[in-house]
Length: 255
Image 1 (cartoon, rainbow, N blue to C red):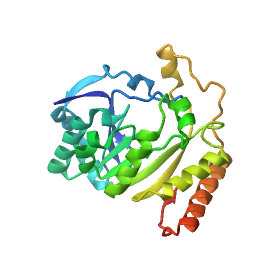
Image 2 (cartoon, rainbow, N blue to C red):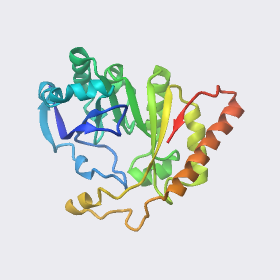
Image 3 (cartoon, rainbow, N blue to C red):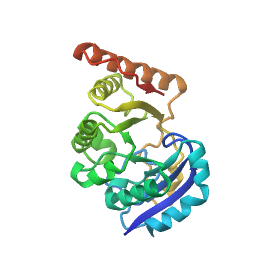
Image 4 (cartoon, one colour):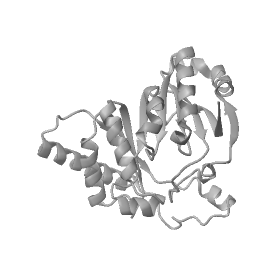
């Protein structure tokens, strides 16, 4: 079995715990306005590699991953589009090296397609981009009902999750949206951490290289104060939902 690979980072430090081997898969069903890897969108691009070939790239750095309690993270693009390949890779990495496995996903996936993959996944980094479906479609090109069903299914599986949310001024940072997002997150089991990721412009040159107009031209990067404000609103939304529902005050880190 071979997968379509966009690129490899052998020393990732932000996509899961510890130092991680990060594999970027080719292909994505969403086209997010802030995407910093639009060159992953094409399902037919990338380099075809076998599981053994990917492991050969990982193995020289194995000691770094073990000593830091890191592992492998597969991202994209959207890795669930190639779920059978990623599942085989995760199973083999666990069998050979007992490394932790993390899946960075938009959640735009039917649970039945990803069941074997999720069984081999220790941690899901789930990107919740917009809690309102119409605005989600404007932002990504697709509504979010499938994503919310996938999130609920992960919750029912008891899967460990880190929720990620990109904070884009004027698009994903309104108090109403952040409050609703916080209330929704409270309904999910297994959430260990929430990451508010400030929108950045590091991928703009890729849009230019591909000859695509960058849709967020003129949108500023959020300031530290704006990120802190968003964090406080999200936390208040979560607390309000807990008080209303009587849900336990579980420990969730927000950064």
